[in-house]
Image (cartoon, rainbow, N blue to C red; front, side):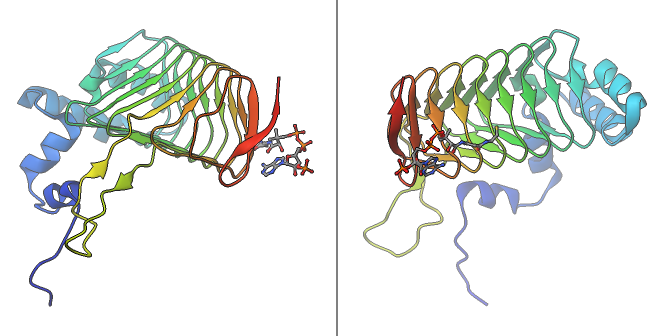
Length: 241
Ligand SMILES: CC(C)(COP(=O)(O)OP(=O)(O)OC[C@H]1O[C@@H](n2cnc3c(N)ncnc32)[C@H](O)[C@@H]1OP(=O)(O)O)[C@@H](O)C(=O)NCCC(=O)NCCS
């Protein structure tokens, strides 16, 4: 067996495998009673189906969050880590099996009437994610950052997208990449009233202007002007308003 096993910094803390690590992941530095409340509520109501599940999660789950306006719908089987670092607006819908995951000093803010569809993941690893009012995130999309991602009002993101992936720093003195920190480029900024097609990847550092459209299966590596339609790998302008 190999003596030195190289892992990511996050993997390193996870593989310690103790309760302290677990508690830190799910509720951060919140007091013990909050962690116990989190455990009770998740165990009793987290997996409950039907209207009973929706009602009980509305009553009990939402109190876990930093701020919420009451009228939220939370589907069964969602994973919420560090709920005190998550704000939900009025009428927000979090569908079944969504993950809202905050690490370290990260923060997630979801605006009024935003919809996060099934199996999607919103991951603020020490960064800030801001989804404005009316944003619609399709099935199984991942939005993850160590810096910042903002998505403007009423922007539509189709299924199976990945927004925010960054680069691992290359090392010149060894072939080992996995334990190197990420090379951060400032996050992703998507404007209002955009339409991002299915299976699009938008890399860290990209800004997409208001009203832009990104074609299905595109890889966006550079900025997109407002009102432009881009497509392809890498994405290029195919038309503009
Ligand atoms: C980007 C899109 C909106 C463009 O539609 P359009 O304006 O009608 O464009 P056209 O079909 O006339 O295509 C214009 C050119 O762009 C190319 N193109 C269009 N979509 C493309 C794509 N996704 N990837 C690569 N090239 C694409 C076409 O081949 C055509 O090239 P040509 O001029 O060399 O023949 C559309 O093709 C698309 O990808 N829609 C996303 C669908 C989706 O994901 N829906 C999810 C539901 S929310």
